Length: 198
Figure (cartoon, rainbow, N blue to C red):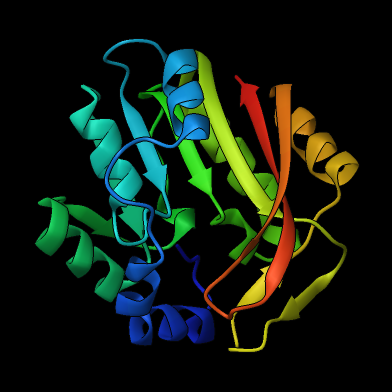
């Protein structure tokens, strides 16, 4: 689940198997099911930063055509080997689709994008969605940019900051969820998940 930062991508390539072990089985989590409910039956989905592919596979198995993208070749390999997913290995700024998707799932992926690069990327996501298309985006709460204890680049956001960026790109934010959980580094961190539509 990375953007184009070489150091971040290298961490995910080296720790892909460890990251995959953090997954929660093969079924849909409640927040994933809620996203699918908003998308509607059979809607086409882009998993934008799919990692080892658990969520993309679960959404596919629930009856949705799913395109998966990740910048880590090792994550893509895991997704193919375990779930039979064909993952496009590319940086996020490769997204050029227009009105193609009913939903874009961006779970803890856009936080690896430098803040200066996020507005045009959100605009690209907006244009990749059909009118009324659904977006899920989750990031770690905080301010500024930094590398974590294992070298990954992070951009941290407040609720107000991320909401404003989404609205500036044309989205309407409809729901928000908060939590705290451990990541690959082992550190527990607070996060926010926003539901929005084009």
